[in-house]
Amino acid sequence: MQAFILGIPYVDLSAQKIDFAILSMIPEPIARNYNIIAYKKSETGLEVAMLDVDDLPVIDFIKKRSGLKILPRLTDPDSIKAMLVQYRKSLQVEFGNIIQKESTSLKPSVDEGEKSEKELKEMAEDLPVIKIVDSLIFHAILQNASDIHIEPGEKELAIRYRIDGILHDAMMLDKVAGAGITARIKVLANLKLDEKRLPQDGRFKIDQNGEKISFRVSTLPTFFGEKTVIRLLKENTHGFSLETLGFHGEALEIIHESLRLKTGMVLATGPTGSGKTTTLYTMIEILNKPEVNISTVEDPIEYQMPRVNQTQVKPEIGLTFANGLRSLLRQDPDIIMVGEIRDGETAGLAINAALTGHLVLSTVHTNSAAGAIPRLMDMGVEPFLITSTIKTIIAQRLVRRLTATKEKYFLSEAETKNLTKLVDLDRMLSLLKKEKIIDPKISWEKIPFYRAVRSSESEDGYSNRIGIHEVLKVTTTLREMMLKGASQDDIEVQAKKEGMMTMLEDGVFQAVLGVTTLEEVFRVVSE
Image (cartoon, rainbow, N blue to C red; front, side, top):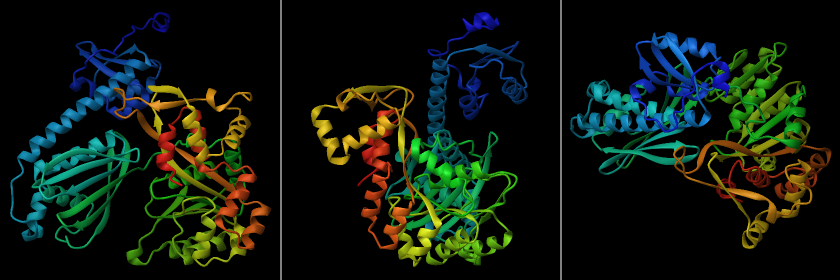
């Protein structure tokens, strides 16, 4: 109907197979972000299917990129989704072909230990090796992987990708490919080629389709050779909001309230890879106004932000978190972000900064919000300093999101009984009613939950991740308890009385919304 009104032809691509040479004329990230697919090339120009045919900047970009006249056609979301799946499948085939073809052209060589630096450099510049490493990186970006693991075994080299927090086997190569691939990655990350007995860390950057991506490289000697792990960080990832990260209701209000303060400290806690830094950057994006000076000291700088003075920690030359923070305080900042508080010296300086008129954002490695208090005390921070500076503590984990193809079900009596052992269902019901998620008269038997369903879009029924959180506001009552040396459990009990939703409860909340599954929540939040 819309196509008829606009006078633009409509195309349905949901069942079509498009030649990859034409499909790839628009890079996958652009196709995904702007819902535009190249599907037919003729003498008159390049036909592209779009959801928004009035998106002139994208049409102009594709025109400049392809050098062809662009003929926009209207399509539907199902067609776009089907084509994005086709991208992945075509690239997987292409990726497999490159890897297999190039790894067979690698020459078996003498034992790794006997190679000189010159030989390793030659190996790293070998065309098949370059193609393999480029393919590994390109495919990892395409699959939205956070890490690439290159693991030598006795006879094989395993390549694994961590996608949405779960490791997946990507490819098994011949052991002979290992030395060249490691040497190539070492060249990119500016590491010592002939050092195989000690772990090394490095980094490099690439610019792909206008998207800047940083790679952190770590090598570790193992029994069968050097294991390499590459972490991928998209530098210009921004545009998040606290709501899109999974914050809601009272927790969201508490964070906004703490960000309006001029002094004090806001902490994000959780294990490595739980999204703490993304939460801090999102807060900085909210605070980033022309009238304030924001400075950070980080390791590494994960996202680059305009108008924010970001300093990279370099312990090897003496620029530690503590030294960086000490220097930063002489730079007249209003808001300070400390990437991580990992020792007493940094903790003391951060607390002191919060006491002397600065708003400080930082992270601590603990499993819960209440756990941050004893952790800081272990670092030697006095309880009265903690209570006078810390305003809000956020604990978080990341759970996988369900795709649109999901199956609705209702809890059986046995399942409700099992859930009762983990969560106070009456309290959970009142929390859901408070945020107007369910009808006030409804009971657990009538509340729908969802299961993951495999589809062409996703092998396991999940795609991307969202945060589950607990946000602890340090109230007068909690301050008094902390000063009296109350335990972590007592603090948590009191915070719950004051309305805090625990991480597990927030997970159940997201499961009721149909965002994730109960299984995924219990996998991530182990009590």
